[in-house]
Image (cartoon, rainbow over all chains, first blue to last red; front, top):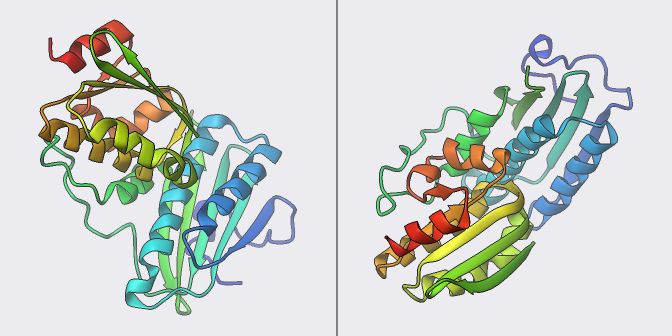
Length: 156
Length: 114
């Protein structure tokens, strides 16, 4: 298991053996995304995560994983992709590890928001959603892997 | 993911989406949605009331069709997204370029351009 970016910030840490932590390995193909999202939804439902928290975590994971599966090949193909989820009172944490080329989705430039329909760009929407819908998001490159940690907190 | 295609008013296409517009859901309706919206100049109202999830892939389908429709002189508007789906549309700026309405009459009037 990889060390975490900032265990104190996310509430992760030496809790790996508890049943609230769940892990899922993805095949390196876009077709694996729906299966992973179905799995995530089942985990969140099994812990009765409130719908707003679940919606935001599902959205962020969907966008981050889609990006890895579509673009991971550009700088070296990802071979192993793992999604882990931990559920805590008041928040849920997802972590995506992949051994593709280095890519920090939190510092990549975003296109401007569209001013008109004609000028609207089709790309960049997913990274914007990831950044705006996560309560917290952390990225590190660790041991040849991209490690993205996404926290969704229950609305106050 | 379901897509129902109807006509309302004077030649307005009324597209009712139902389900999750994630990767799998969007792929399931993308061809029919694009064929219904991007091949004519008829005004389009897209009813989102029964859409429970919207990811960027789903936005792309809406956006590409709205752009193609505009190039033909037509107009697309959105009807009744849930609070969560609307937050996605606002966050990405889509709500500023594909207008959102709360009732069908206003949506149809805006789609017609009247």
